[in-house]
Image 1 (cartoon, rainbow, N blue to C red):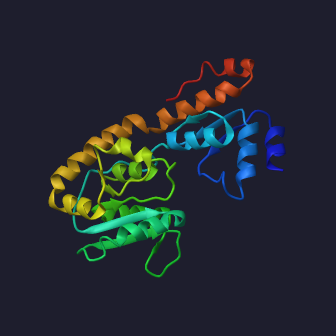
Image 2: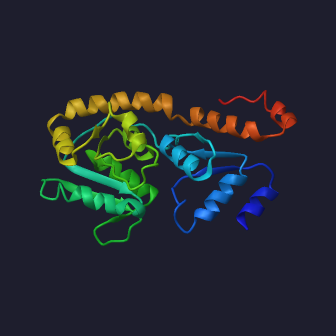
Length: 239
């Protein structure tokens, strides 16, 4: 099985993205965590979940930014929801509160529906370039802030009802709370929204740069390598 295959490769790191411990994959997740040399997660909440189900301490490593940084902009009345089908029900709940607002709602997702824009890297880029606000919702309390990071890098203001602890760290740069009120605030205070985005971009550059995140991964992998192998890496440097 997967555990035996993983063990045959030597020390390994198991990265837990979603909480499947109580479902049909629970035994698999617990076995993989139990046999791993290190367990990693993308949020403190997911680390707590791993600890509760397996007794293992997990190292928290957030996601790096992936997209280029654009100038902050909040123009027009288009609101974008960008996400996976696993989170689509959370979007429906949020949209019910803004259905009568004079906005253009774009849904870019892998969820197949005539009204949805099929996700692709190019569709995502085009959608981000057009929108004024990005609506972020989710069903996974242990999620990372990757979509918030993506929106801020794209220079777009984020409105979210919250519900994911990792998003609270971004409170100074986004709107967390009533979605309708957040969208109205952004449209009525566009310069202030752009100022928040600009400050958020500075935070992202320091916190979520590929170099910073790669360094954290290198520390994890170095910690499970044999001593002589780790020593050979001492001269390596991230540039």
